[in-house]
Image 1 (cartoon, rainbow, N blue to C red):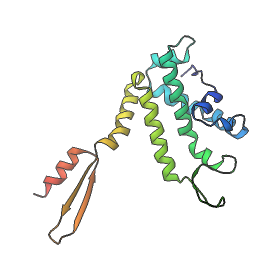
Image 2: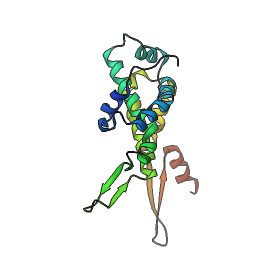
Image 3: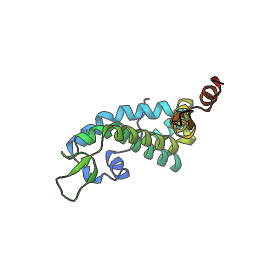
Image 4: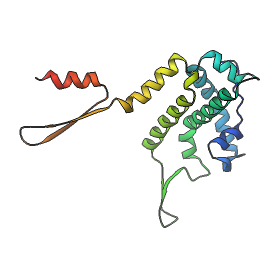
Length: 179
């Protein structure tokens, strides 16, 4: 990872619709400190040829757009928790009530869920340029959502037990093991 993807903080803020944070010292420092982690993520999850092209002066429009969007999404992924704690003293609001004094900030669970969504979206933008590690990560994130099997079993005492399996093979093994 010797080259830097040419994406400015202003580009990131515009892409993420956070233009009102432009020039804020805390946000600028936050993005600057997390840039190495974003670049490392990009270099680990994309092929070296595509990363080098994206970091070069003569990249194609398609690779430029894909890497710019992915860079922005991963920057938000890496900084979301900190932005929630320190966004001009307000945090990221999940909902507001009729009264301005009643607001609810997003929770840690919501942050973790959103971070996975951001990473999945970034991987999808980079789909054509993914390294084997990036492809595994994409399958890992998508697999947790797509391969879920849920089964409800009625017991002799008329109670219902619900089981969730994330892997169809584990489901079949558990289903037939007691028979």
